[in-house]
Image (cartoon, rainbow, N blue to C red; front, side):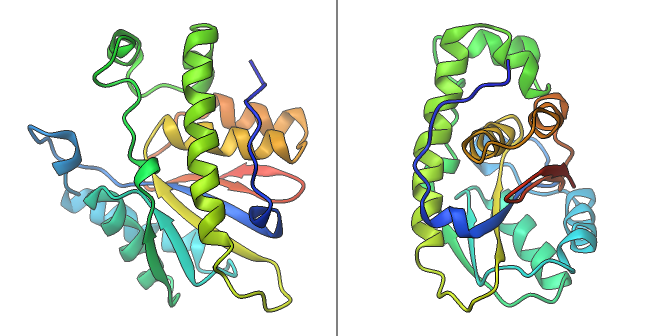
Length: 205
């Protein structure tokens, strides 16, 4: 399954986009309360290795979950970037938990996006709608970045399984080659890792 629902992201067209997953977390009674472990904080700092050389935009789109806020803050500070965090409520939208499709998440857990999309049209539609809503909100962040004549990289920090759905939707909109779509579909997104989607390719971080 290499297709994804259409999105409207006119301002994002001028940006490369990094989709960064939060680092390792401990358990909590309520999902949004999960916090980074020491390992997770170390992973976040290590993410500076691939962020350091990118021309990162001064605004960063982030899930409202504390583990995402801490991850991207540690990573970008370690990389030496000045930035302002913009939380996007739609990024933290646990579309499978709880819901009538919670069984899919329970059964597959942290798995590549291709495994989820193989579950059929209903699951694909849920991910495509999530991507459409999120990318519209992220596009609003991109619209606030003052152009300076150079193409910059917008950083988006969020959650496993959901992030590749965003990367896939954007890569599809940009008509990237099948190899780029396959790379996104087949990756089990690593902690404090993710995807870089440019104008002509997508690669894993």
